[in-house]
Amino acid sequence: MYLMKQNITLAADKSLLKRARALAAQRGASVSAMLAQELLKIVERENAYQQAKERALARLHAPFHLGGGKLALRESLHDRQNVVDSIF
Image (cartoon, rainbow, N blue to C red; front, side, top):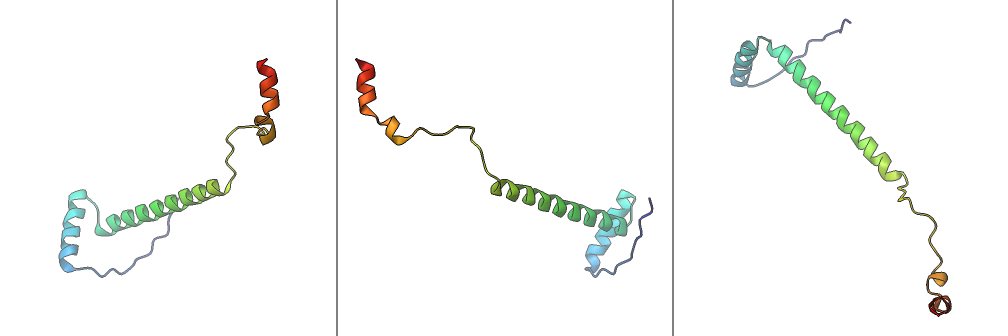
């Protein structure tokens, strides 16, 4: 699979670029390759965050079932006559 690449211009402090070149040399890569890899990580992390956010918001808007059935009517729960009859 061939990916089309495009050059960009970057303005950075000279001492930072010097340290970046040294780091890239230690890693056997170019500054451009290191930056491209970091940009890819940033974009992928943002995409993952957005997907997680969408899933979480969808869960918030979906009904949450606790598994219970219909509740008894208040009157039947407080029916004193049936309680007295069942004791005797």
